[in-house]
Image (cartoon, rainbow, N blue to C red; front, side, top):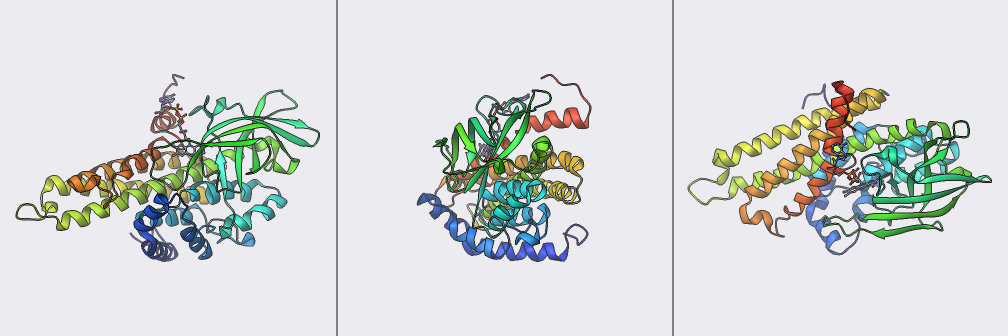
Length: 386
Ligand SMILES: Cc1cc2nc3c(=O)[nH]c(=O)nc-3n(C[C@H](O)[C@H](O)[C@H](O)COP(=O)(O)OP(=O)(O)OC[C@H]3O[C@@H](n4cnc5c(N)ncnc54)[C@H](O)[C@@H]3O)c2cc1C
């Protein structure tokens, strides 16, 4: 990759994270998942090396970089077979929103811990009756004196059990118009009335998904992030990094699967030559590599725009990057599993579980169809059916 696309600092970061990831590797993550644990050792070491807070402001202990750097960290850990899913929510969404819009007190309370990895924050927007249509969320915040009372339900929220708090997207009544406007609240894990139930997912993953119930959860005024009237702006500031990071997650996973398949295809010989010499095996792997490279290019564009402060331009690019990366990942994983024949489905090679894992990137945080809708309407100016 040329220096125009990636600076020497970025290349050095990539190489250093890759070395760390390879030291842990797939075997480490597989053991963590089998033991029902969490990748705490990798999380702590990556944090200590400054990788988890690389995007957060230096005055709060971060690296002073942006989503470009953070996405490199997640991609390289994923390419080594040990991605840290909570990076998508904790430093990328929650850290960004608090750094950009939090009160000075919220910044002091949360950013140093998010930067050094000692604290984690989950993010909850999805609701059972709203799903892709987040305009329909009904989690409602009402004032009670200076406090807030939050009531509602969330679903598929990742890592709530290990996070110190969850950044919950709710709605508060606008005193002037009476309409409900989006607002973000920091809800500590053990707050009274904040219930969680683990969802039985068919995913081979250390991070669990939860259904949440908020039953008149009482929060102090300081729990509201930033400005009550700027909720939508704040929300979008967090959603673009989420999409870029999901792209990084998908590209890392695709690269990991592909590298396993390539190594296998170079060696495995059932006729005269290794199977990789057959073009029916080699070409789909080459295509998968091209698709992953293209997706990464779009991810770099999105990160560049976002870090330069172009939220609107980044919105379109982040959506396209997430779409391209998810599709490239699904195809790379599918082809990699196939390349290994029967071994593609064994626990020893550990690729089959990536079939479900790769689908996550196609569904979350915004589905393939909703991105196609976005591009149809926003970019192409086509009419809307819903
Ligand atoms: C592993 C995992 C982790 C997650 N972690 C989090 C998290 O930490 N925080 C969080 O808030 N959420 C999280 N989510 C939720 C995720 O963002 C949602 O699953 C996603 O937004 C889709 O919502 P839904 O599942 O309700 O699907 P639905 O909205 O019910 O959609 C179902 C299908 O219909 C399609 N569809 C819907 N509307 C349209 C339309 N207008 N046009 C065309 N097609 C349409 C969709 O593309 C999809 O294929 C997670 C999900 C998963 C699977």
